[in-house]
Each structure stands twice: as C-alpha cells, then as structure tokens.
Length: 290
Ligand code: SAM
Ligand code: GLN
Image (cartoon, rainbow, N blue to C red; front, side):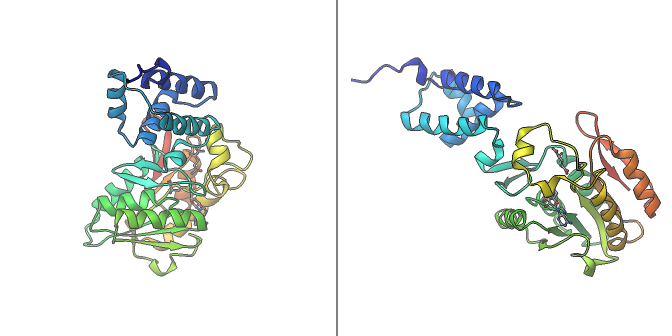
C-alpha cells in the first residue's frame, strides 16, 4: 500500500520552511536561494522545481536530508555559489569555491565595455589582458565573445589561479593564456601591443568592513583590499596599462560607486585620455574607461 504524502514533505512546504530559515539568517534573496538550492540537490532546473511545487510532489527522505544540509550551510552565510559550485557570468557557468572571488553581476558590465572596445579594434588578432582574473570571468567572456582576440589573464593567488585554470579547460578557450604572477610585471613581454586592458581589481579601503557576511567570511582578502583609500591597485594598473598599451588602446576598470572621480583624475594625470565613468544596472558609478 502506498502511503499518502505528509504535507511536511511536499515541495512547497519544504521550500516555505527553507525560505523562513534563510530569511531569519539574513540572506538577501531567501526565495531565490531556496529554489536554486533545491534545484541543485535534485539535479533539476528552476522551472522543474516550480512544476514540482504546482504538482504537489514530495521529497524522499534522502533528498530532504541533503536539502536540510545545504540550507544549513547557506543559513551560516556560505555563498550560494560555493554550495552549488558554480556561478553564472554572461554566457558562461564558472566553477568557483573556497579561495576564489565569486564573480558578480556588475562585472558583466566591465566585460561588456572590454568586449565592445575589442570589437572596435581593426587588427586581425587584437590582444586583451585581464589583470587579477580570479575565476577567469572577464578573460573568458572576452575570449569567447571575441573569438579572433588573443587574451592573456594574470592572477597572483595560487588558489584563484587553480580555479581559473579549471574554467579555461572547461570552456575550452584556446585563445586564452593564463599566467600566475603579479600583474605589475607578469605581462612585461606584451609592452606596446595590448589593445584592451581590463580589470576588476581589489578596491576596498583597508578600514572598510564588507556589509555582506558572504563577502566578509568567504571572499579572499587579497581580492578585496587595496590600501588606505582602496586605490593602490588602480594606481598600479593605470601605469601598467600605459606600458602594455599603445596610442588608442582602452582601459576598462571596475571600482566602488564613490571612486569614479578620483579614478578619472588618476588616469588623466598618467596620460590617459577621454576618461569616463559608467553606471551599473542600479545606476551606480561602477566602471571607468579611458
Ligand atoms: N576578475 C575577477 C572577477 O571579476 O570576478 C576577480 C576579481 S577580484 C576583485 C581581484 C583579483 O585580483 C583576485 O583574484 C586577486 O587575487 C587578484 N590580485 C590582487 N592583486 C593582484 C596582483 N598584484 N597581481 C595579480 N593578481 C592580483
Ligand atoms: N564588489 C566587491 C564587494 O562586494 C568588491 C570587489 C573588489 O574589490 N573588486 O565588496
């Protein structure tokens, strides 16, 4: 005889409990995360979960236990992307985990400016660089969306470099070269040849405490902090970009919403022209190009 499903095991009841747990824990998007984590546990899509909810499906004891475990991790503010092991970035799904900065939606806009600048170059094989590539996000977007470009990415952290290497292999980007080293000098052999210099460098001031626990507890410190005013790396990158580039090259930098004016000053003082700051989808100044 088949047992009637108890309401506690129904997908909708399980999701409601998870949403409540995540809300209490202060998670920003409890409903989205509850659904995505159930999809992850069941190996299903987000749409499948909605369907299961509508059709009053129930969960097996094993799936329920697995779901409780991931909800507990998320409630402890482990990033969603560390639990699922992946982060979406433009057309890509990148592998991420401990030791690498989780790519953010706003960085997709940095990639867009870099891609547009690359497409505008007349050379048959324009060169682009990504300084501090982390998971490889910006570099892989440039390499896949501008297939005739040659992209060189550099990362100093061994852990992050390992994640980037996995992602380059996974995506199969043969026009991307990944290097391990300090962006101040790792690309010196490319002096005078680079059309587009892109970077989402560390830009958080030394005394700032990230508001989100996920960032504070799980993003590597060396991915976030950059001296007293947060601009130490951008000062270095401005100079590196001038050495790597040639007249007419472009630089595309992500930064904090309060840093646009100072960055335009740094770039202009160094000799870059036409510095301009652009907004993200929430109308905050987040990208400066020159
Ligand atoms: N570009 C990735 C993204 O947007 O998701 C990662 C950005 S994260 C904010 C900055 C990255 O720069 C980190 O992975 C950090 O390890 C790396 N980094 C910091 N200083 C560096 C340096 N001097 N040379 C090379 N990489 C550096
Ligand atoms: N935007 C990041 C944050 O959430 C900071 C990233 C950076 O320094 N590049 O704090």
